Length: 85
Figure 1 (cartoon, helix red, strand yellow):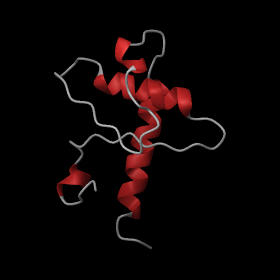
Figure 2 (figure 1 turned 180 degrees about the vertical axis):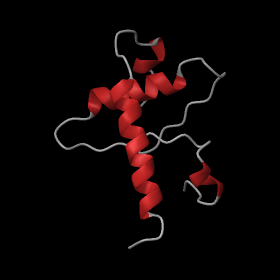
Figure 3 (figure 1 turned 90 degrees about the vertical axis):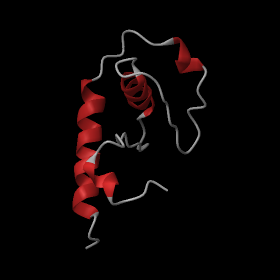
């Protein structure tokens, strides 16, 4: 078993939980400006401006027919010792 498989499973569970909890009623104007088909998307902005909510809304709306996505906050301790790319 890969030494990081437990941590990746934890990140997947967090991602799924966050996606399931997000509400989709209000959508930000940027939703149509982002190239959602890109392999990796980063959004910067002030704390509390809706970045996480927007990412999770998009992820939730696109997860169907076996599609996969992972939302991971780079603040997670996992990334202290594991590079993103």
